[in-house]
Structure formats: C-alpha cells, structure tokens
Image (cartoon, rainbow, N blue to C red):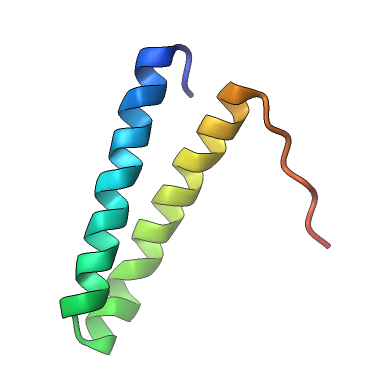
Length: 64
C-alpha cells in the first residue's frame, strides 16, 4: 500500500518498467511465451495501478 509521495513515484516507475517489459515481450516472444508470461505482468500492473488509485482517492466504478 502506498503511503506517501515517494512511494507513489517508485510505484509509477515500476509500472513503467513493467509496461516496457510487456512491450518487449509482445515484440519478441512467441505466442506461447506471450501467453505464458503476459498475464502475470498485466496483473501486476493492474494491482499497482489500483494502489495508486487508492492512494489518490480515485474510486473504481463497479463493473457489471
């Protein structure tokens, strides 16, 4: 859980690195490798974005 601005910046940097890794994986990996590795990266990015939203006080809309 993000508790201050410094942790926010670190988390944003981590997301950026994971997004670059996902781009590289998409560009260079086989479909099998992409299917095996991408979901974990995407889920990690989603969790960190949710932490940022929580820290910033952004409420997520419920999905139907």
